[in-house]
Image (cartoon, one colour):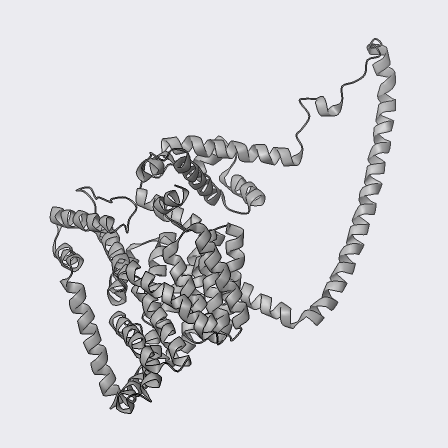
Length: 557
């Protein structure tokens, strides 16, 4: 009977969302685009991209030429349609269009689409699909070696583990993500990670540590002036205060956050805040006041298809109604049982277990293994240190012997040349030789040589930006090196590949250019930095600095 009721509920929910999605203007335009071909398809695609630009999903208006291939149109339209529906908390449609767009991406450019799908499935509490896409996204980001984008992927994985009731695994991901974000120096990313860390330690029952992370997240958001994100961090802080049984403080924080979230239109965060407010009131035995907050949260999450948070809302309603209306409480308990049966599946647990097992030889399991085997490693380290010390002594003595032999041979050679030199060359005036440091032909110290090498490389990158063609092959030609030699030297000096270093140079120049010449449009900045596509520039800028070009400009204004 429960399964029958649940299937009816799921079908009704899906039907409501489908009707809502197809009845909006974007849904009608997407239907027209998918039925069109040739020039009509291009016209429909341009109309859709104009609508997405008006919603400020894209940094600049994207328009397609009449000769654009159909697959290119579909890739961009479907991806931005997925972004549109995710932004409107319609996660089923976000998944539908994201799945269509994904096969049309190639290489590392798939990462954004994979991350969007992981987040959409996560919001729907489908952790099996969420972890699969998050894992693939992390693999692509790991190949770039960029600590900022890697920290973003690990944050998504931590959130999935929290949703799937695996906080201990989430702890490993979020701590590694924070370490990477510190390397990247991205404060906006750090605020997100600190907020996630507060959720992780709250789930682990370490609420004092969770409160420290939440306070740091709020402080960063205030410093950055991001009021919308601050409300989310305050909601996370309220969760920790509830864990510490500081009910009234949590209520005060939520009384400020809930109206702001309603005004901002952030329905998902609003639903979470309503659940937390219900809990705060229920803990103070104010059951009747808690009911409307739980009902609002249940309605929001039912419409979104977020089973995990809807589960908490119906549990709260059951507890709040128990003394007020036992019959209604029984209905909420039945709903709670139905949702619970459908939420935590064996497949989800197995999928997460397989994913964690694949990291056995990666940083996660290596760190844990070191911690568990410190005594054995200490003994082994002592043996290795002794061996290395012996090798170092041998090498030093051998080097000293060779230097003494070389010095002796130099004296012998000088003595052999002296008679011939004195006969052939007249005696020179007794003038002091110039110091070696003043000799312009003397080789530069290694540090200076490396600095000059990087300065030359940066100069060539900036020169090529003006031509709109920055490639590793051209850089190698200008530096008079092979591509492999150039990559090895740049990697040794900077820790990243030539391509990644050149991209950082271009994006850093773009950031300086926007601050120095605020009258320039984003498209003009992209063009000056060698990006032919303003949308590609915006995505690269956001992945590197944690904010889009327009957001960065607004913060600096």
